[in-house]
Length: 422
Image 1: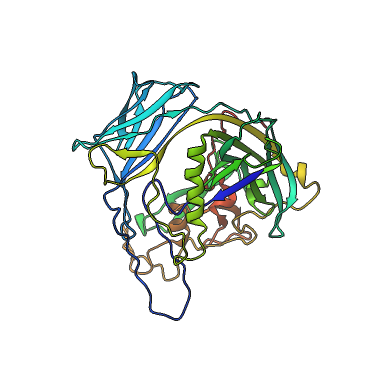
Image 2: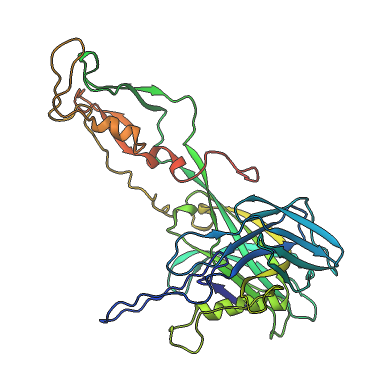
């Protein structure tokens, strides 16, 4: 079974060319030529009954930073040359079908786009591939080729008949985060104005009204394109295919972890398109025979045959599986990964700054250092309460920690996902 991992440098949201050449020569300023006006299309139709999304933009040069969205276009998908599914623009360059629908097997689908200036674009007619359900999704402890100990996410499919099958994968990671130093008390700023009524700054602590920030949930989406194929195999089966690897030192594994793997059954042409992206992204040198450049997809201009269009209108059948596991399931009685913030050292910022001074009177005027380090860090959401300093210290009364140590919303959401299983 063949597997490919692609990190795209030729993006569907623009054109990015990355050159990494290290030598004692004069720096070379790269420029992108010839594709500045090309339409970029990100469109995929699946068998899922839902409102489908299409993104339109113009290719950007190496020198540009902002994406140039294409607005006010007429976008539709035509089924069997007669049924039309229209799309509406919900934000610049972002189009969504007006009704929910799903592609059907043995039907043809064509993408149609008419820009606001009248230029029209169409794709070739594409047929929905036969859906292949994921047979098994598991995890196992593994040492990878770089000597890293971690968790491999493994996928298997059953016998897939006599014809070669082509797949693309993506995944969504979700994981539980626990604030290691969550405290039921929080800071309460009483007086943050220097010399108000002739008094000094004042900060107290108060009980929190909820446990928000104690347990959170993070999310990561796959960034690479992952391909697999059964072509040229004796057995037409996906077996022990590694979709993802997580180093055991990654804090996202610390407590409970979940991954949703989505399998897209592709046509051979769509698979070849993404394989070409692989060839571009793995070229060892910009001076090699295979160089990043324009990659023709299945979308073309009806108005101007010489105009380039970037992207591929893909029809793909979808199968998804989600699994959960705890760190201790694979690493029993072993040390947990380190939290991504250092929580071992307590801070003790001053409430009353050095050089603080107020003139006498009912309404004092600060004529010294008028900024409280403690209040400044609280207002900037940089710290959380850790403990009261003993013995009492009026100038610096509290110990503190970086906010993430006591409030996990720095790293994730306090809202538990609907699919989450404890």
